[in-house]
Length: 125
Ligand SMILES: [Zn+2]
Image 1 (cartoon, rainbow, N blue to C red):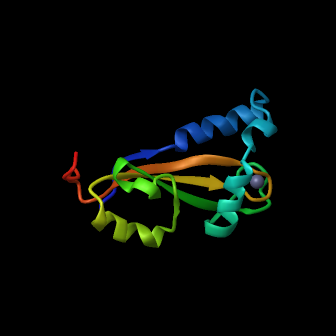
Image 2: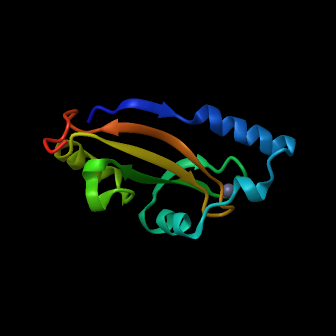
């Protein structure tokens, strides 16, 4: 797999954490993981060794979503990292979004996104 058009959201994340510390962002707003995201983290998430930057009580879980016109009914689905390699061979182009989630306090933020696929337009386009 050769991820391309990689976007690292570390800067936006640090900005959100700084706002949280300064009080201009409330903890309720920062830790607003929706029930479906918490469920996805619990059942389909992948553990990381990073501690939650907000509560420090639990390690963050990564939830990976895939988006792309070619994906059809798979668009917006949660995928395991291991499944991406096959999708990379199967599809021309799709974007992967990785969200970090704390299952303890509800902190959630985009970690990174990137494009995978063979790099061809699909024939029907
Ligand atoms: Zn937390």
